[in-house]
Amino acid sequence: MQSALKRITDAGTAGSVTPSSNRSLPQNLAGFGTLAEGLDYAARGVTGFNFYSPRGQLQGVLPYAELRRQAVSTARKLLSLGLRRGDRVAVVAETGPEFMAVFFGCQYAGLIACPIPFTMYIGGRDSYVGRVAGMLAAAKVQTVVTGEDLLGHISEGAARAGARRVLTHAELQALPEAAAKLEPFRVDEDAYIQYSSGSTSSPKGVLISQQAIMSNTRGILRDGMRITPEDRAFSWLPLYHDMGLVGFCLSAAMGQVSVDFLATASFARRPALWLKLMSDNKSTITYSPSFGYDLAARRINGEAVTLDLSHLRIAGIGGDMVRADVLEGFAAHLSVAGFRPEAFLPSYGMAETTLAISVVDPGKAIRIDTIDRHALKHEGRAVPSQGPSARSFVACGRPMPGSAVEIRDGRGNVLGARAVGRIFVNSPSRMTGYYHNDEATAAVVGQDGFLDTGDMGYWLDGEIVITGRAKDLILHNGRNIWPQDIEWAAEQIEPLRDGDVAAFAVENDAGEDEVTVLVQCRMQDKALIEALRHDVSAVVHRSAGVECKVVMVPPKSLPFTSSGKLSRAAAKQKFLSGEIAELSVLRPAADLDRVGAVH
Image 1 (tube, rainbow, N blue to C red):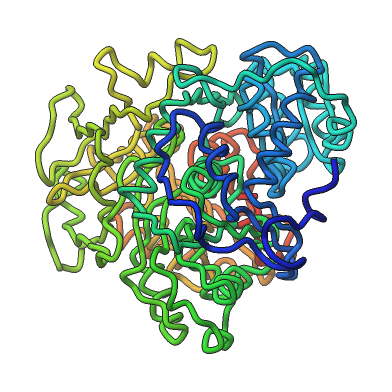
Image 2: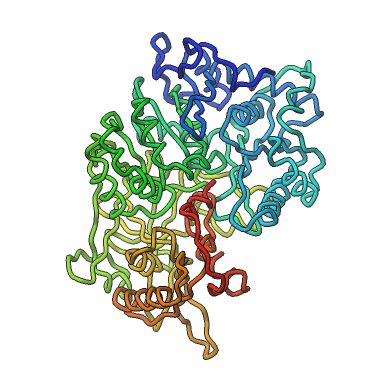
């Protein structure tokens, strides 16, 4: 099959992107039963996917018509291997047309696609190979498709997991097409396996049905983003993560929306390129965790005045805690480019609900709720306050239509407004379960059908406010301390940045919990390091009222999930095992340590 990177069809002259709208095809916002039906419809128009190089040059154009042609051909090639309906096919989720062809090819062939990470996590080759092996074993995968660059790593992981077949994209496309009639997945069948961003040594594969993905994409397109025929999206999010895969690949195809892609690694190297390409392409929709906006704003420097972001009507935020200070800083810095603060669209979601749980109404100014820190910690209530001990949270919108969301206390009682508790969700887009892991499924899905998200929050006039992860709470002298309070306070100290601090409790020799704060340090001078340690200790005492042990660790030490969220549980585990240790070798570090965990 001719490479999609070289093929320019149905999109005008060579070198031009796909149009932003279909003039002769009415927009249908996920009014389909399956992903294959949705791509069949999108293929009747001229919109599609576009791929940019690390230098911002248009590298490939893939109209939905061509994607469908490649997917059907790939489906027949996969079936020539003797695969049976429902077999799992793992595919390395590199941002490019090859991944799209295999993923949708699985839909037409009746095979369950399992996207796996493209680039190595912090920890190097062994860490990456081990994680891949765990994913393949959890999904009982026998066939893996990868690019040439990672063939050695993937082959080693496949061998550990007992997967018997690893193919490069070139080898897959060299196979003959099976003559058998294609039988795409039906409405009542499964669609794919998504690995939860919290997966570590024992990854859990989230099994998503056709009904779940179609319900969630429908909600995202119609009620969340309120897509119009003129919308054009831009994404640098990784395609193995739910926000990238569902939000900007599957939902876009189901709504016939053109999307411009920049690989996550390219964003990591040049965050400002995201803004420049959106300006050039008149993008109307994008999404990022809070730290992505922070990075881009810090890197754009004086170039902001040359940009035009006035077309951007949705700048979504998801994937981690929404940082009001980051959003305010981005809006102030990019106002000269025509960026409007009301474009921010906070949302809340997770892989176990396919993606979206709640979204703020588009065009509505973000709502920041400032509450008393003492009442939050000691009473479990969000009491409005503007005093010195106040802290701010961002409302993440109302639940998606058809979803039921409850906030419960430790005894299971449903709580009312401003009472902080654990968030439970039941919706048509809830996962079928963790693949071949009934025990893990039963641990989070109750007999009433509600999913325990593991997140803490409260109601604010019908909107959900997220305060943190329940398992991350620090219990100190009878108090509940949110680790985010400590981390955010410490990260205000120069030269620390978002993602440089991890806080958790460790039991000391006396059997008491000791608050431990890991701080990534890029400095080399011992006196400066000790001064930073003192400053962090002081700010933690002022903000949280506790004494803490500050441990200065090398850059790139802290672990992050696939969505770029700090994994405090993993940080604690690595610290206790000695894998993360006190800074001893002093050397300069690159500026991209935070983003390095995302791609």
